[in-house]
Amino acid sequence: MSTVSPETLEPAIRLRGVSVGYGSHVILKDLTLDIRQGEIIFIGGGSGAGKTTLLSNLTTLNRPIAGEIWIGGIDVASAAEDALQSVRRQFGVMYQLGALFNSMTVLENVMLPMEEFTNLPREAREEVARAKLGLVDLASAAAKMPSELSGGMQKRAAIARALALDAPIIFLDEPSAGLDPMTSADLDSLIQTLNETLGVTFVIISHELASIFAIAHRFAMIDGKRGGLVEVGDPRVMRDSSSDPLVRKFLNRQGVAIHSAPAPH
Image (cartoon, rainbow, N blue to C red; front, side, top):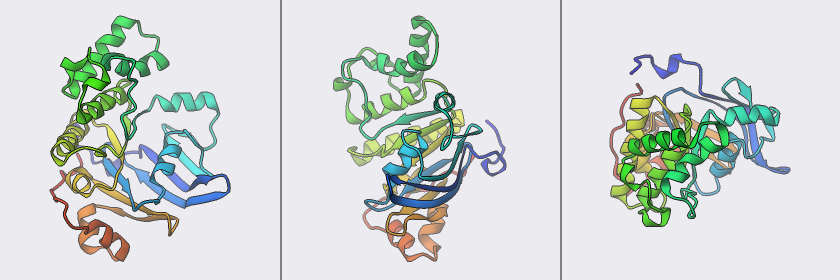
């Protein structure tokens, strides 16, 4: 495992003056942020903060109204469609509900990205998919249908699919949604292990404080009312000493277990 600090590496994603929204309606504006290679960064805020809108732009489903989003040396805000296809191999996505296809087995779901982006024969795709399921402790579930899995297992299967192409960046959309605290903590542990062993950069859209304090290297708070990035940094430092009252209020909500996150590798 590399001992190079993520701060010294070229950013995995660079946002420069990014504004996102729909049509002429701007939700977030002038976002400038470097997402470091090998870090776990959470992006969160209150209801209506623009988290989902920002994710749709980061994953190239939509294009920003203004600004630049650089991934793998390509500005996805202005790139042609063929260039975007190349960029899409650089990341995997796990959507909030897992988004597994119920008509396919778990193994077939994990194989899907390889069918779209590679020319590997089926035997090779199956071998890779089984290996990815092993990484998330689901090797024995390969032949099952998604409906046969618990909510936590479905999230793990979706992460395995996001890892199928060995992408250096993984986006997770509300990974703890719908999970009980113990299952959510187990998922946090898995994300942390994958980050440490594979060096994957995790960009996690979430407002779950337990997860943020447990595994985040950094937290970026956005706010729709202010229309942009409020603050980014170590969530524990932000919670205890941010000069912004909104940040302190958000990170000091009660009734949430607080743990210590590991230092970035």
